[in-house]
Image (tube, rainbow, N blue to C red):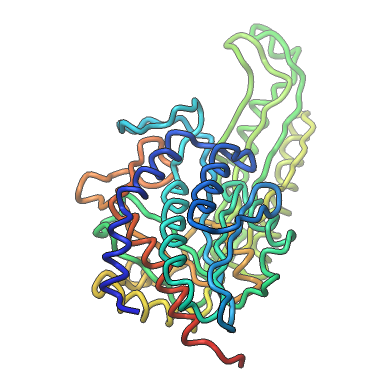
Length: 407
């Protein structure tokens, strides 16, 4: 396959890809509730000649190729948005209050649809099968395990997997692809919820109440000692309370105070995470009791760390260099060789089959794209959509062509 021709064909799709992406951006949906998004994706795939198959609670898959014997590679795009009020000044801003494509999943979906169109054109040349996955509920770490349980990695059996994630607000030229080396590249993540129950009362008579806000504040401060005094300095373990809620007005002591946050580690066995969870429970319960409060701690939505296969990563670097030339970057040069603290639920796949997770720069901070993902003002440079489509299609076909024999 001629890489120049493929890039030109992908670039010809750019206006349509941008239209699809902005349509999705105007209609963000979260979790598994992707009625509009899934219908649009299904319609586009059907128009291309595919037969979309529903998988799990809200996922879709299609198969490209399969006319020649060979292995199967999985290409994935996530479709869900964030429960975030958009503040970006763009004409295609979200039309749904409290929801926004702040992580670029609308970009991912459009790019994989573009790849699907390219792959349909080259379907007779595909030496094996390319499985395209459109996944829900990545932001709550439930979409990937749901689709795996529903048979994502079988029928046909998946031999390798890859994904792209866009980045904004980074000092990297738009359109450059960052490829990680092998090993752990992203942290595990688990949510926590701490509930502190006291006894409400009037703000003028705090002695007649049991103030859960005071107890929760001391719990929050006490938890900080886990990092500074209980974790090995060589371990990566970070937990952050990002949501604190108590009361509704200025003159009433509430019955309860609540905190929500995340725990992240790069320990593949999650021993560091288990220690943090144990100490969060013990410290919260102990401090709560000292302030006459009852405390409950819940943990949920665990996602493992991302494991990158060294051989597949090396393949990806070679292929992207062939396709984009200097547009291929070694992620370790940017990250300093350290695993990132962000998390990604495609990590569930990475623990099952050889996986590579790459990044596509879509907003250079030096050119005005100063906000990064999950910020209400983030803007993605969607002029790079065709690059993502070409990378998906080329890597899928090239890997299959070079990996026909089973080791």
